[in-house]
Amino acid sequence: MNVLIVERVPLVAQDLMEIISECRPDVAVHILRGLPQMNAFLGALETADLAFVGVEAEQRARLFAHEALRQGVKRVVITDRVTPPGPLAPGWFIEPRPIVPEAVRRHVQALVAPAA
Image 1 (cartoon, rainbow, N blue to C red):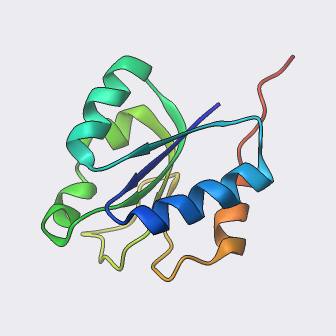
Image 2: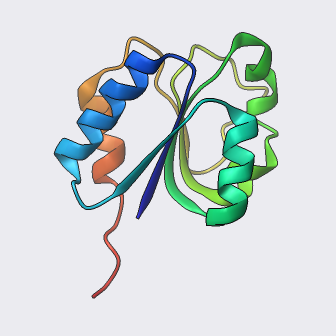
């Protein structure tokens, strides 16, 4: 299972990674600096189970139409205060800052482990 953290603030990314690792030490966590890096990473990975996304203000408007997020990630959690242009797509959530550990845990625990 793969979890992406696309985050512009290193301390926020570190906090997210620690919470995720506490909940699910079995998942691979990848920290990326922005949407362009995420595009390349998803191109190699194909899909991710969960992504926490916090990007610069000028990129926020593009989030909801971002093809790699829409097609390559099963569950997307936007960690910024944003106003969606309409209803959120299934599997998309907004959890604005400050990061609430319980909200992060809830999304991580929603991941279904692959069948053995």
